[in-house]
Image (cartoon, rainbow, N blue to C red; front, top):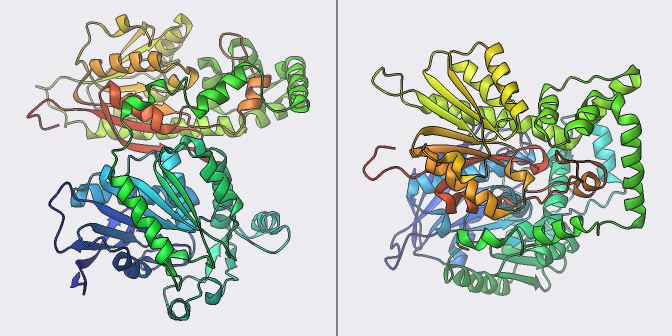
Length: 601
């Protein structure tokens, strides 16, 4: 449906499909006189909690970019989008919906992500910041208005009470205490808010708690974000605290970032009586964003030595982390692990082969607790339920999902066509690949499994035999970081997989060398499925207590998603999708090698 806007746009209403198939509602504002001095640009607006995209219409006009597109969608559980009012399957789903919406805009309207800028308010600002951190989209910039990193709940111990209450009532909802007059000094805007029948009065306690947990993570690891950011904060905000907004801003690695505290302003900073200061800051920032290009992929090549993650990693290597008390605590845990760990089957594998080894990961994948005596099995269950290992198992599921998608998308069986060829450059036992290939016994598939350790090669060969695969499986001993490992196989494979490897090595030159070999091995239009670890909440504990496959302290440098994607891009790939795991610790992505000129792809 289309209608004529009284100003510079033609408005329309439509829907897009989220990654889970849910159809979400959105509005589009098409410029009647689009710019002719360059590519088409777009402002993507995210409404605050409780609201909907209909509330964005006045902002489009007030921002005044009459030659640019504008878009806004109703978050699920809001406005005309489906779902119980104020609810969603999870906060991560709300972030994934934003990623799907931007992908829809790029595909449907032909506007590149590099030419989009996001304007997000309150809860929407946290959704957008999480998207920048976890998905690393190459957008032009982000305006964050009164970001809800920490909501003022007023009731003492409100969050612990909500967590406890959800044990008995998982679908608990919380009614908003905010009155319209607490949001804005404008009586007109307050009255419009109060009379809007689409405003959701309540919010799911699950979403509220997951919002708080995610916000804490994003504020803590804001240094991983280098997209230009403007933050607008209200000096009289009754809804959210300003402290976390300042902390987030100070930690940002963005070369262009600005923080503006708006005087005599309530929470709804974009709906205030006097918006002159906010609009002036937004217009100046947007102009600055479009005046500069996004950071080039080559910018990240030196991030292993010159970045926030590199500095944190160097501190880990020098044992300069925590304080004397925490370091003493880790030393005690290390001694207890050596003494009692062998009672747990999983800990024993880690102590013997390294907690990052293929043997250890294979044990974690099986997720079957065992040990000596009853105490050992209980220890093992706790070990397997650690957040990192839960993330590893989710990563396996996501990797298999994307691999199955790519296999299914391969052209239908044709005797005249060569078989689908899959390469795994550091397979370990290759359980995730072989179990997936087992589902496609009717397809002609050839699998090449490589690993630097002969015992992993032998384990992969044994697993392939036990699964009785129809596919041809070739197991080889190869070093993923040696250019010679890829020589003579240029343009051979349709799909390449690298899982859990690059996370173990901080050196970007090594990773890039491997990626270049992988992309050389792919045919034009082929795909790489790769994993990353953008952050981890237990880096210091792991460094202080666990050992790696080399018998050394297991010190890790989380590689931000933007950095990992940039290395893939430099090597010859273009990311097309990312899946986020438990608490954003691990990601699984797909990149495509450019097709040959004139190829159908």
